[in-house]
Length: 590
Ligand code: ADP
Image (tube, rainbow, N blue to C red; front, side):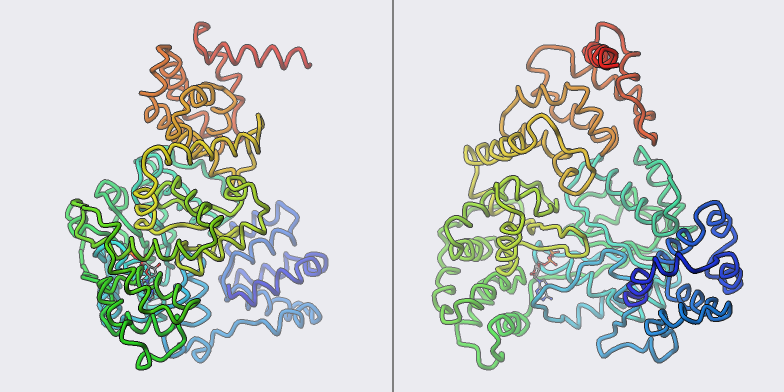
């Protein structure tokens, strides 16, 4: 539903809830085909007006219009008048695209599917874009894969997002919608969590009442996704951003329509169906690079100084690097020569055999961008070294790490974002922040060895100070971060004792299983096994066994009583011992 229509419903929600008689309205809406009999049945069993509005808010423009018409037919003229101004127009005219092909409808589909917005400074790459769109049109009639491949930082993700920002693509090829999934380098449990949340998102938009258990293995996840894509979201497009591994693709080998970005051209060899590809061979061509610099410095491309061309050449047109330099020049427009010299100095030169990408320019640009930050912000930026690749974090996590007020953190993050040192996903509320892979590589490279250990230790200490013995349990973005990554930070900080006490505590098991599911937890025991086993006790085995035996129970909602489950473990086990203590404690408290 368009933003204006939804906002109107939200504004007048209480008034509508108080005044309407849903059963009559629903008859009209059923005959318009915007709600079905099952939905009507379900609404009848609840507070009907509240439930109808709830349902309506998840529907499209047609539902709003049908609801409006129903109000008119049932002579709720006052209420209908409230909705009138925001009636979406679905006449041919209203859908006509603006000059570059997007309409409010397209925007809404992309925003619902989590497709990233354009970067603040954006240049179009029409030739490449047309190539991607032409391949996408081939998926109109049949499922298949479109691979966009090329070097890191060459603009693949931006291109993929741009390709679907197009009315024809959305309406003719993918009327079922577009769903964006950032993948990156991940292991199986993380992949499972990604697909769980995708399924949740897809199911939620159909019907918030459905309380499906999340799939608890990759096989099950694949089947669930297959069902959803075939039956509930036919002719929709999944965009998988930054795939590294063909095992990931196999999970999506379910006869649907997929656009993927990757550095590895041959990934789709192992999956079935029609395949098309587009190469993003290098960076931007020179004129486009200049255009970015011109946009940042608010000059016209012809008026750029001669150093501009050299800057673009020096970084081989990498859009990421040009953006970093552009952001610097925006603030200091007389430093063309200076930044060009910085780019040319190869003092950070390192040999990276694993990739053909020329990292030098990125290193120089990053160093220059960091250098202009105030000293204390340079230190804060350095702290981002501890993030895992492809992980997005809310400002609140950094507010704990930096021990600063959230407002202050937001200002600092805004500064980083303005300098292209950090990116923001503003679809999400709260906003989520992330680094480009190459930026994280840069930070890790700079802060290797001891410094890295110190930084991870700082994360753990700040967490401990903030939460003392009371870990966060709310399930919000910040809590999710800690529950998922606390063990990782402890391990990287070499805090093996602390890691040990945390992971072999039934309370932690219970919280993490409830919030993230048992798969993640089991993965922790496997991953950190070598550290945990050093103590020479069998706790690791016992906890893993407990989780494998009770995994299916721990997937259930409402969440079971972990102490009760643990009491059925062998009495010699540490799991049992802790459960017994807790049971006795409960008994003594009555
Ligand atoms: P990749 O997916 O190939 O690693 P991205 O698409 O994430 O690269 O692009 C990296 C960065 O480069 C973006 O965050 C943005 O700052 C910049 N960028 C990429 N494409 C463009 C473009 N068309 N116009 C302006 N900046 C771009």
